[in-house]
Length: 257
Ligand SMILES: NC(=O)c1ccc[n+]([C@@H]2O[C@H](COP(=O)([O-])OP(=O)(O)OC[C@H]3O[C@@H](n4cnc5c(N)ncnc54)[C@H](OP(=O)(O)O)[C@@H]3O)[C@@H](O)[C@H]2O)c1
Image 1 (cartoon, rainbow, N blue to C red):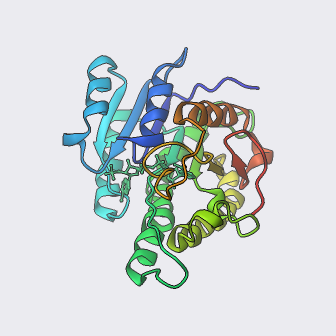
Image 2 (tube, helix red, strand yellow):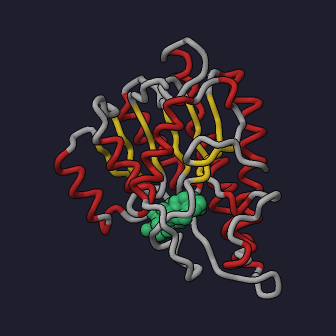
């Protein structure tokens, strides 16, 4: 297993849940990123992030709503300025939402909204930050693809796996499943193309995790967010060219589409 030590990392939806835990664990690494951009919709109420930023000068909190092209562009300009000519090594598209619904009750609004967040938001993030990812790919370690060089991680879900439909018995969550299935396809397509630019792209399922989203169906999962994030970071440390465009679990298992 390699050592995960990207110089710069950006996480969306970093004010709570898995995004916040990713930030916490990046900060605790033996060699933390020199620049860790924790982005969220409303920094003024992101108390946990603000407390962390008071203790860690490498942590930068930025406003970023993945539903808004203008917000993504503003965040890009700020990240580019702060990186002062360096590239961005690791982009983690983590922001997400879920709505309970059934095949009978799912609404057009929520189908649009979750496609907007999970698919269009992740696509716009990768497209907008591409110049910084390319810069990192050109200037980082040149021995194949890795998260230390340049990578896009799309946080997906096995609930979007057409083969397994994880948790079907606990909820149809149609807008969630369809949008994550589309995110998986986006990842495959990006994986094929971005590898030519020296950028790795994968989708990861963090497991069914305790917390607001994981418990929203009424089922109480056993996996803690600390374990999920530790597992995902281990997976990130092992990724190379052969994983490009793949779909993996937090334990590193290959998942069926
Ligand atoms: N938890 C699980 O069991 C599980 C399982 C499989 C996959 N996942 C995936 O893992 C990711 C993180 O989930 P989680 O459990 O940490 O969920 P969570 O605790 O509900 O946190 C979701 C995060 O996404 C942010 N967000 C929502 N809409 C956004 C937008 N338009 N722009 C920017 N940020 C936005 C939220 O910000 P606000 O605080 O502003 O709402 C929050 O920070 C999601 O992509 C989810 O689908 C989770």
